[in-house]
Image (cartoon, rainbow, N blue to C red; front, side):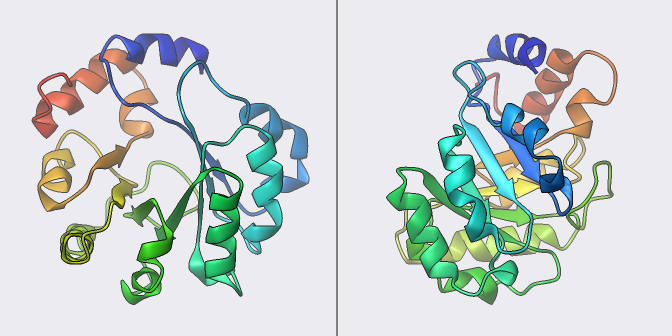
Length: 203
């Protein structure tokens, strides 16, 4: 990951070191705790795709996370979890699963710093993008603007050169890309291609 960071720094991106925590991963505790160490100057964004994620907020917060996102369908007390993340001095995020309606996150928008629209089903990399995700981005952007909230909107899953521009037009502030950048070839060159496709002009 340090090699990748040095490659991407030249693009002056607001990059994140994104750590996905999936069911079963926590049985092998140490690898995740090692991964949750601050990486250079990149913010560490931990996406807890697990049941009872509130039990792990303290652990990943203490391990160096700057941002922690949870899934509402895995929690009994979503508001409490989000407030606990903020109480720890971290940015709180909520993730919208492809199978869940937008209403799943609407009631907690005032409690979060960012929302992640999942455009694939969580679990493994390299999945095909779910086209309906663009509509969800547009609806979410409209809600955030109508309520005048300072909530960042991210999209995660299946993002590539051929769809990143539409994601930005639909309301995404942040695009999460993994396979599109690191699945072979020159990661820095791939980032450049995606920036150009997004209309970012190298920013």
